[in-house]
Image 1 (cartoon, rainbow, N blue to C red):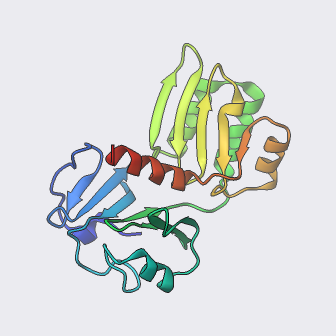
Image 2 (image 1 turned 135 degrees about the vertical axis):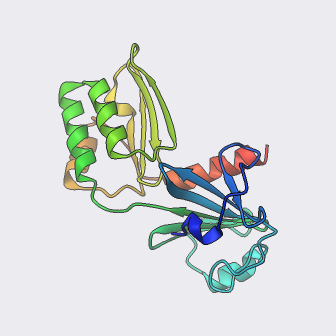
Length: 211
Protein backbone atom coordinates (compact mmCIF):
# COMPACT_ATOMS: atom_id res chain seq x y z
CA UNK A 1 0.00 0.00 0.00
CA UNK A 2 1.19 3.53 -0.72
CA UNK A 3 2.52 5.72 2.09
CA UNK A 4 1.69 9.40 2.34
CA UNK A 5 5.44 10.10 2.42
CA UNK A 6 5.46 9.14 -1.27
CA UNK A 7 3.18 12.10 -1.95
CA UNK A 8 5.02 14.74 0.05
CA UNK A 9 3.27 17.27 2.28
CA UNK A 10 -0.49 17.43 2.62
CA UNK A 11 -2.19 20.35 0.90
CA UNK A 12 -5.17 20.56 3.21
CA UNK A 13 -8.51 18.83 3.62
CA UNK A 14 -10.77 17.94 0.73
CA UNK A 15 -14.27 19.40 0.61
CA UNK A 16 -15.71 16.47 2.57
CA UNK A 17 -13.40 17.20 5.52
CA UNK A 18 -12.31 13.55 5.63
CA UNK A 19 -9.68 13.21 2.89
CA UNK A 20 -6.44 15.17 2.54
CA UNK A 21 -5.11 16.45 -0.76
CA UNK A 22 -1.60 15.73 -2.11
CA UNK A 23 0.44 16.40 -5.25
CA UNK A 24 -1.24 19.65 -6.32
CA UNK A 25 -4.62 18.20 -5.38
CA UNK A 26 -4.35 15.37 -7.91
CA UNK A 27 -4.58 12.72 -5.17
CA UNK A 28 -6.67 12.55 -2.01
CA UNK A 29 -6.04 10.24 0.92
CA UNK A 30 -8.08 9.08 3.90
CA UNK A 31 -6.07 8.30 7.02
CA UNK A 32 -7.15 6.44 10.14
CA UNK A 33 -4.99 5.99 13.24
CA UNK A 34 -2.05 7.30 11.23
CA UNK A 35 -2.42 4.70 8.49
CA UNK A 36 -3.51 5.09 4.88
CA UNK A 37 -6.94 3.53 4.33
CA UNK A 38 -8.00 4.83 0.93
CA UNK A 39 -6.22 6.66 -1.88
CA UNK A 40 -8.16 8.24 -4.71
CA UNK A 41 -6.29 9.27 -7.87
CA UNK A 42 -8.20 12.16 -9.45
CA UNK A 43 -8.55 13.12 -13.15
CA UNK A 44 -5.66 15.60 -12.87
CA UNK A 45 -3.21 12.82 -11.88
CA UNK A 46 -1.28 12.05 -15.08
CA UNK A 47 1.16 9.36 -13.95
CA UNK A 48 0.73 5.60 -14.39
CA UNK A 49 -1.12 4.03 -11.47
CA UNK A 50 -1.11 0.29 -12.28
CA UNK A 51 0.18 -1.81 -15.18
CA UNK A 52 0.10 0.91 -17.81
CA UNK A 53 -3.28 2.12 -16.57
CA UNK A 54 -3.91 5.80 -15.94
CA UNK A 55 -6.87 7.75 -14.56
CA UNK A 56 -9.20 7.96 -17.53
CA UNK A 57 -8.02 4.78 -19.26
CA UNK A 58 -11.16 3.33 -20.90
CA UNK A 59 -12.68 0.52 -18.85
CA UNK A 60 -12.60 -1.77 -21.87
CA UNK A 61 -8.83 -1.38 -22.00
CA UNK A 62 -8.56 -1.90 -18.23
CA UNK A 63 -10.47 -5.18 -18.54
CA UNK A 64 -8.23 -6.32 -21.39
CA UNK A 65 -5.19 -5.80 -19.17
CA UNK A 66 -6.87 -7.14 -16.01
CA UNK A 67 -9.55 -9.69 -16.99
CA UNK A 68 -10.23 -11.14 -13.51
CA UNK A 69 -12.86 -8.64 -12.40
CA UNK A 70 -14.21 -9.08 -8.85
CA UNK A 71 -16.77 -6.27 -8.77
CA UNK A 72 -18.74 -4.25 -11.28
CA UNK A 73 -18.69 -4.27 -15.07
CA UNK A 74 -18.13 -1.96 -18.01
CA UNK A 75 -21.90 -1.48 -18.20
CA UNK A 76 -22.03 -0.45 -14.54
CA UNK A 77 -19.29 2.11 -15.08
CA UNK A 78 -16.60 0.62 -12.86
CA UNK A 79 -14.33 -2.40 -12.47
CA UNK A 80 -13.13 -3.63 -9.07
CA UNK A 81 -10.27 -5.99 -8.25
CA UNK A 82 -8.94 -7.75 -5.16
CA UNK A 83 -5.17 -8.32 -5.28
CA UNK A 84 -2.50 -9.02 -2.68
CA UNK A 85 -3.09 -6.51 0.13
CA UNK A 86 -5.09 -4.08 -2.01
CA UNK A 87 -8.49 -3.54 -3.56
CA UNK A 88 -8.55 -1.34 -6.67
CA UNK A 89 -11.60 0.27 -8.26
CA UNK A 90 -11.33 1.80 -11.74
CA UNK A 91 -13.75 4.44 -13.02
CA UNK A 92 -13.61 6.72 -16.03
CA UNK A 93 -12.83 9.67 -13.75
CA UNK A 94 -10.74 8.21 -10.90
CA UNK A 95 -8.93 5.19 -9.45
CA UNK A 96 -9.61 4.24 -5.83
CA UNK A 97 -7.26 1.99 -3.82
CA UNK A 98 -7.74 0.35 -0.40
CA UNK A 99 -5.36 -1.64 1.73
CA UNK A 100 -6.78 -4.57 3.67
CA UNK A 101 -5.83 -7.09 6.34
CA UNK A 102 -6.38 -10.76 5.55
CA UNK A 103 -5.02 -12.93 8.34
CA UNK A 104 -6.27 -14.80 11.39
CA UNK A 105 -7.60 -12.34 13.99
CA UNK A 106 -6.87 -14.33 17.14
CA UNK A 107 -7.12 -11.46 19.63
CA UNK A 108 -10.40 -10.21 18.19
CA UNK A 109 -11.97 -13.65 18.39
CA UNK A 110 -10.75 -14.00 21.98
CA UNK A 111 -12.42 -10.70 22.92
CA UNK A 112 -15.50 -11.72 20.96
CA UNK A 113 -15.74 -14.98 22.88
CA UNK A 114 -15.43 -13.13 26.20
CA UNK A 115 -18.21 -10.77 25.20
CA UNK A 116 -20.52 -13.55 24.02
CA UNK A 117 -20.12 -15.20 27.40
CA UNK A 118 -20.22 -12.15 29.69
CA UNK A 119 -22.32 -9.70 27.61
CA UNK A 120 -20.10 -6.96 29.07
CA UNK A 121 -20.41 -4.49 26.20
CA UNK A 122 -18.33 -1.72 27.78
CA UNK A 123 -15.36 -4.07 28.18
CA UNK A 124 -15.82 -5.33 24.63
CA UNK A 125 -15.71 -1.74 23.34
CA UNK A 126 -12.50 -1.04 25.26
CA UNK A 127 -10.87 -4.25 24.05
CA UNK A 128 -11.77 -3.83 20.38
CA UNK A 129 -10.95 -0.13 20.07
CA UNK A 130 -7.60 -0.73 21.79
CA UNK A 131 -6.85 -3.66 19.49
CA UNK A 132 -8.00 -1.91 16.29
CA UNK A 133 -7.81 1.88 16.41
CA UNK A 134 -8.40 2.28 12.68
CA UNK A 135 -12.20 2.11 12.73
CA UNK A 136 -14.12 3.90 10.01
CA UNK A 137 -17.17 4.70 12.15
CA UNK A 138 -17.67 4.63 15.92
CA UNK A 139 -20.73 5.46 18.01
CA UNK A 140 -21.32 4.06 21.49
CA UNK A 141 -24.43 4.58 23.62
CA UNK A 142 -23.45 3.01 26.93
CA UNK A 143 -26.78 3.68 28.64
CA UNK A 144 -28.80 1.81 26.02
CA UNK A 145 -26.05 -0.68 25.18
CA UNK A 146 -25.89 0.25 21.51
CA UNK A 147 -22.65 0.11 19.53
CA UNK A 148 -21.86 1.04 15.94
CA UNK A 149 -18.25 0.23 14.98
CA UNK A 150 -16.95 -0.57 11.50
CA UNK A 151 -13.73 -2.08 10.16
CA UNK A 152 -14.25 -2.61 6.42
CA UNK A 153 -10.59 -3.49 5.77
CA UNK A 154 -10.93 -6.42 8.18
CA UNK A 155 -14.46 -7.42 7.18
CA UNK A 156 -16.15 -6.61 10.49
CA UNK A 157 -19.16 -4.40 11.18
CA UNK A 158 -20.66 -4.11 14.64
CA UNK A 159 -24.21 -2.79 14.93
CA UNK A 160 -25.24 -3.92 18.38
CA UNK A 161 -28.64 -2.72 19.59
CA UNK A 162 -29.74 -3.43 23.17
CA UNK A 163 -26.67 -5.62 23.65
CA UNK A 164 -27.72 -8.12 20.96
CA UNK A 165 -24.60 -9.89 19.70
CA UNK A 166 -26.26 -10.72 16.36
CA UNK A 167 -25.41 -7.15 15.38
CA UNK A 168 -21.80 -8.32 14.96
CA UNK A 169 -21.40 -9.19 11.27
CA UNK A 170 -18.52 -10.84 9.44
CA UNK A 171 -18.24 -10.22 5.69
CA UNK A 172 -16.74 -12.22 2.85
CA UNK A 173 -13.38 -10.41 3.20
CA UNK A 174 -12.98 -11.58 6.82
CA UNK A 175 -10.45 -14.34 7.53
CA UNK A 176 -12.70 -17.09 8.87
CA UNK A 177 -11.50 -19.61 11.46
CA UNK A 178 -13.20 -22.66 12.94
CA UNK A 179 -14.07 -20.54 15.99
CA UNK A 180 -15.71 -17.72 14.03
CA UNK A 181 -17.58 -20.31 11.94
CA UNK A 182 -18.86 -21.90 15.15
CA UNK A 183 -20.16 -18.58 16.49
CA UNK A 184 -22.00 -18.12 13.18
CA UNK A 185 -23.41 -21.66 13.23
CA UNK A 186 -24.63 -21.10 16.79
CA UNK A 187 -26.32 -17.89 15.54
CA UNK A 188 -24.48 -15.76 18.07
CA UNK A 189 -23.17 -13.46 15.35
CA UNK A 190 -24.16 -12.78 11.73
CA UNK A 191 -22.59 -13.92 8.47
CA UNK A 192 -22.78 -11.70 5.37
CA UNK A 193 -21.08 -14.07 2.97
CA UNK A 194 -22.46 -12.38 -0.14
CA UNK A 195 -21.21 -8.94 0.84
CA UNK A 196 -17.70 -7.50 0.85
CA UNK A 197 -17.21 -4.76 3.46
CA UNK A 198 -14.57 -2.89 1.45
CA UNK A 199 -16.78 -2.90 -1.64
CA UNK A 200 -19.64 -1.56 0.49
CA UNK A 201 -17.38 1.17 1.82
CA UNK A 202 -16.33 2.18 -1.68
CA UNK A 203 -19.93 2.17 -2.90
CA UNK A 204 -20.92 4.47 -0.04
CA UNK A 205 -18.01 6.79 -0.77
CA UNK A 206 -19.02 7.21 -4.40
CA UNK A 207 -22.68 7.76 -3.49
CA UNK A 208 -21.82 10.47 -0.97
CA UNK A 209 -19.44 12.25 -3.32
CA UNK A 210 -21.80 12.15 -6.29
CA UNK A 211 -24.87 13.40 -4.42
